[in-house]
Image (cartoon, rainbow, N blue to C red; front, side, top):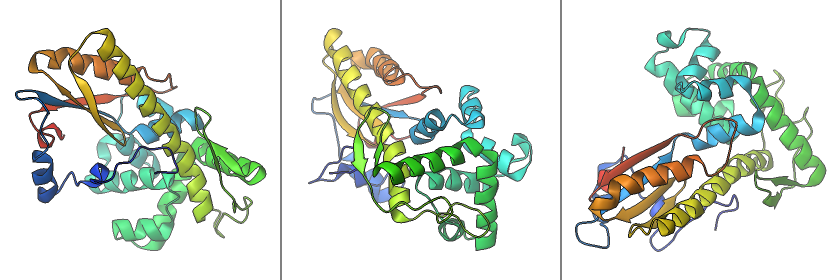
Length: 275
């Protein structure tokens, strides 16, 4: 039911069960493997949409940060603030994280200011500095929107198309200071390509995991996919091998110009699998 190609569930909506609240953890603790004594294995991609953006945009600074295994939010804060990574404070990293993910959804200076409780002028300056630091990402967004304006559609990494109308020319989608200010159709176009390509990737990963489990004659099985995470249930004696199998299949699902990182967590309940 999602236009970007992500899978969704309903009755119950498992995607929207909170992760970081006490109530959410209580709910997740109620989810148990179907067989007595089995365990859940949760494997999730690290910052998959930012990695997809780095691949699609060709931005050299983004690619270099991921290739070196750096924390992308710390690297972003250092570039935007003009300091060494070691000098990045938690507040600076938090702001950079908000911009990194906000960029994918065309967040405005007003939206960033509200999210970080900072003056709008400061938020606008941060966004402008971001696009100066990651010029490749800015050029990618402009080119993507130009093509969408021309063709009336956008395409994901694996060729899924979505029709989008209402994209403006470059001059109209910029503020007086030259900063990007995207409308809803423009935000939708960018999000469809980046999030939609990430959705393509995890669907390939699901197929790869399923094939590997069958080839290895494992009793373990896929149970659920939520955004960038796969959840499996497994007999205890298969957990080490299946954990390795899943991580390898997810990392190799689709060759990108940046490495794919996968975290694996094991637990007797869904709550125990959280980071």
